[in-house]
Image (cartoon, rainbow over all chains, first blue to last red; front, top):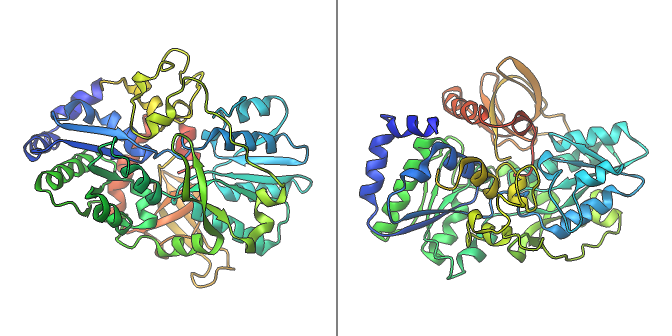
Length: 362
Length: 92
């Protein structure tokens, strides 16, 4: 790949690659949990220059990928109600539930609108007074404050035909659950960039204290990423784990207080099902009773029924960092970006899609 | 998905202290002007600052110098991604 050649030859990057090699005196198995990091690591070719003893594993950092089949089924069930119009982020359209996707439902006549912002969902409600517009809330701490603000706007304008089905998820708790799994043997974490802008770098300190995990918050450029890897290697080698932040132009220790206040106002912690990780305590955000009229789960009296993931699909194990996509029997055979079976192949930031696009060795 | 794009602030409307006011910024990226919400931005921006925008909401304010670094990166990433992903928000 041309880009990789340029990257390897770059005068900026070469000293960093040498430094990475020199910093690594103990094996590092690091996890990244951010779709943009997944893509950036592949695209920049960083995997090809990793020194022996360093391994990068993709974790559950793509919100579409961790949306369970049970939730997809509920989304489809709602979309097929006569008086309901669902508003979604585009990546969700083709994610399969236990029996088809929203794309299939749409072709059968269900009203499914792809929107850019949750505020566009509110606009749909204004324009379609006879429909109940249900925004399908999927996302981590980066996305959820905007959805909270949209609910506040609906309350302010007294728009009654708008509500949100919240499957919002939080990052730190589930990471703690993952790191507690001794089989994973992760000793370093590349912390997600924009989630950290909201929750702050300080949110990872418990992982350092509890598991001795090396943590670095890094940006997305190849040089940023390499610097992150060097710092993680140094932390592991010195046996002195801590939280280091090399993305300070966007991420502070405390995070975005206004967004945090918005989350606190609208949402409360709830147990949530993650694809691959199962039900994790207090890992999700539900809409508070105070805003119950904007909660689709209450408005439509919907019950989520647990369903099995597609047979043979390894997305669950891949999201936990236990397997890589080429180890999945469906990868590149029955499961491709054109005909995805699992969510990690649907989302462009999913690990399977990244492996498919850039090849396992690149 | 997680792509959050820095855009230059041309105009600011609303009152940072008043959640009932329409908190909006008109922003510009490569000549394309659009309105983004300021409801959850960390620091109320001034005209000439940049904001990082995710799914129609500014989540972070940057001064110009900080932002230019990010924009170059996003453009590079963008040249390898389908357009709907860049403009389309989604979950993260």
